[in-house]
Image (cartoon, rainbow, N blue to C red; front, side):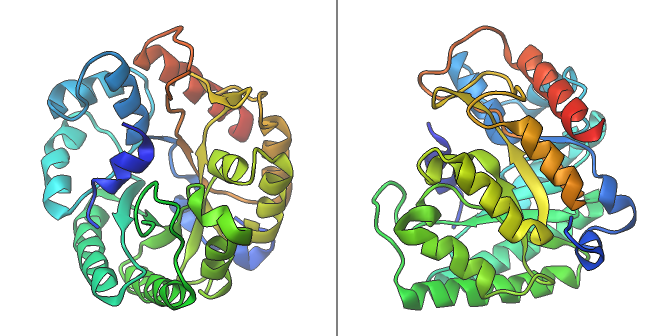
Length: 304
């Protein structure tokens, strides 16, 4: 199961001082998290089912010493299932990832209702960011949204972000590769037609790279264009176009330079490990050791 299929199963800072206030107080130093999808891919490779036994899964997660977890949440009831185990293992939840459908009004209203319900429960756990990637019309179809659908999507992202802001939570826009097709019109439309105070940006660095034809130029241009809206980074590395088992500073993306630029720009974003596996990823270690390596590398790179 790839990330697109996984997400498809779900329904449905700063360059200048004002940008640095996107996350204020303790929110500026949110603990590093690991995204849930990493674990799905590692478990799949091992012939196991992530989430089948939350007690066992999160017990293994704690062995990595990563303090935060970014789960992909379907609805408020799904989050409720996790809470006893998050509390048992003292795992923090700085952010959650929620799929959405925003390009048609009826779908957008439903997605907004679901996300606001999740937010009410998540804020009790200290969640500060909800990341959403509005679904394409159909995963893998290549069908792009038309102008009317894009206008609907940006309008509802703005509206939902405003509602979440009133709850003390930031809505962060995330992309895969499809949003970068056709001149990246969907990607740019969303960020050009919403307000920074209501919609932040979760920059998934490798999807920007891959979606732009494996271009580091696009990665650094995106950082330059939208750095003042970034509240979260999803971090993944590859070698020769294939996702690696662990995050390393040097690879297809020069993360040493990237981290230097982030620091130079004063961006203080939430760091989320999303070092997933794909079909051709070379197997060298297990899920716990791989995450320990990735956590150490990212912590050293961005926080030293």
